[in-house]
Image (cartoon, rainbow, N blue to C red):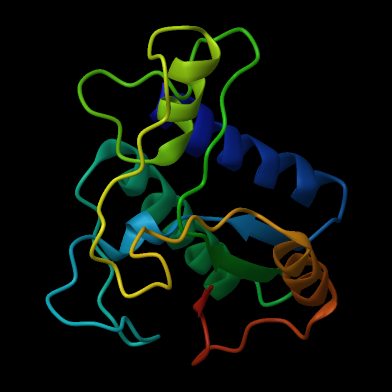
Length: 165
């Protein structure tokens, strides 16, 4: 599903955009394109690699965008790499009910909401936060403002292809 929805869908979108002369795209990628870093923090020069299908599709789309830009400089792309994106298809075809142990918070919240689990358990007590628990970051107005900023920001330059958030 990820390959069809993400890659084929994006290529189709780019074709339609080109047909109508719309050559600007802000792409919501994912931090999963950073793979498993050997050192932190990740920088703009960090080599990209993705370990799982979802991340590989996002990485492939980033490469498609770079290739389209290289072949036609009228295109303007901004590639935003978000951490912990969540979401699902309204009909449940794809989304936040993974097999095995979930790797983000949303499935745990949903399990409580539908009665699979009685309570939401927070993981860890030794984080470097005030109460020792992990900090949960949600998409906030700050992220919206960041997207709006990039929407009208100058186009990518050849040597400045990646923007990471």
